[in-house]
Length: 296
Image (spheres, rainbow, N blue to C red):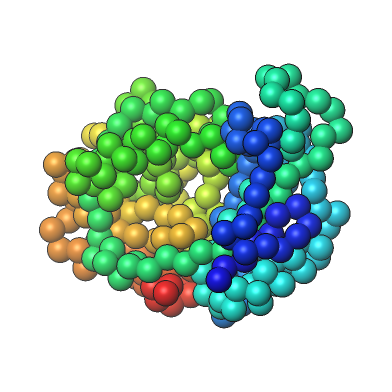
């Protein structure tokens, strides 16, 4: 039996309930975070919490927790209830419950839902994945980790039906990011390109760690949007996310990036090889990367 946390109470998932007038349910009026944990230790917790706080501020949703410690107590108890050491946390905060109206009332109490999940099968993607391309049809505030994900869902589904693991989205022919990941390429000069952090992408926590570690290893990182011509001329490509870590991309549409997937890992080997989880110290500074190991 698995347990969730909902508005101050712990309940088994089968009996978990939320009001039909929850604004997240009616309007996708809320935000979320996914946080990895390994051996019971939360990974990049401060970074995720900072992003969560920013999303709440941007949407004018009240913060439901007084401080980090109160949230950590909730999370640690939930992990103990579920008897799980490795996996992921899903935290969703909606504006709250109110009569259905596009205008939201002031001083509404947010609804909080937290649950855990695991993800296996990551060993299947270590050798690289295929990526498709599509136009970015999302709203103009992709930097907010909103629960409104329908454009991502549709693009991901269409990509899956075409045989792609992931789909990279583009605006005016420049790649922004993937439906569930950030996008990177490495050119022939071993320079790393990824879209700058602005309103067109979600600034991924794993993305930021990769950039920092690459810089520490004296690798040139250029935070600039790249296009299809850059892809055709790149040596390597990869994607990053909390649930996947760092994954090599070996083919984009019909463009073969590198037939020998081992070669695609050369850049990643320079930052201590392909690893799944980033690890930060209490100040939020990336110290290294955990060994790749699928979560069961």
